[in-house]
Image (cartoon, rainbow, N blue to C red; front, side, top):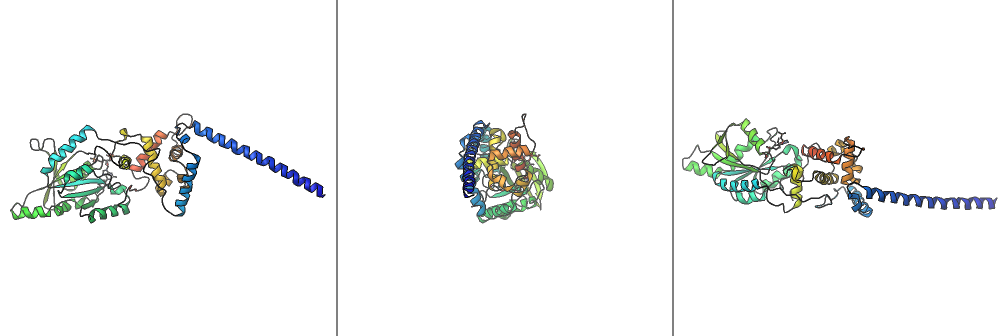
Length: 367
Ligand code: G4P
């Protein structure tokens, strides 16, 4: 009996040995399949990634989750691209703004509340110098309300008059003329002392492309009595809008959107491309969308997860390009052969971000 039991034991040992060999084989096969899959990947992106790097990334993600801190969204990744957009007409606009500054009493700088720092043109800041200025934080309806409050405080603490605006609905627009009066109170006082009581206040509207300058002018024109004038001869080609509100006449000078010749920090260019200030034609949309997904992965909003039917785990563990493929498939965006149409999905992800369908997101906070 003992012998028999020993044989059974021995036998089972042999059997286990075989099983171990078998599972080693299976693992080897799995590794080979993995390597083949990487090698045959359409974009070749997987090939460059080492499994150890992925493991480290996942471990970092798990650690971050435990410590409840967001996963690092790094300055640069394999999906980063060099972004620049400064066509010739912007050089001309810049010169014109510089020349026309002498025509106005104050400058209203429209910025994007989702990127309040990146949407400030450093060239304009330099050109405006000490001229009274108001900051109009536009598109607040798309930005994180808590971050907007922090930014408003940031500007106020630096002695800059800042207004929170939503030009789509007109929220905040009512405080514009009183803000103009406030920043020009010394000038108004000086004019009054000289008996110049009915002088209008002239304000230049500046801002980067797509920030909402036209929408602001249209909106304020509707809420105040406004008329549009071209004043050839005096300021050739300039568009002036005259508003009367609360007994004050304000003349607005519209200017075209202008960026600056070089983004010293590429993340600034990237943020401006996310929000649509840098036009899509000068960027690789798919790469841009992958960078946005890298950002969203590091700070997933409820809306982002729900919109693309993703679990937190899924968003965190998949690489951005895998995430884009999953999103494309979930939305039924396929090319022939059933592969994910990542080009289409990339455009959709950017559009949904820009329309705040992935949540009200502010991409930068005050230091
Ligand atoms: P610009 O003159 O500075 O170049 O910008 P413009 O007013 O043309 O506005 C650019 C886009 O931003 C427009 O959208 C406009 O509707 C939108 N926009 C402006 N202000 C706000 C705001 O406060 N909130 C939101 N959510 N959007 C704003 P578009 O899609 O290009 O045009 P449309 O479809 O609205 O006509």
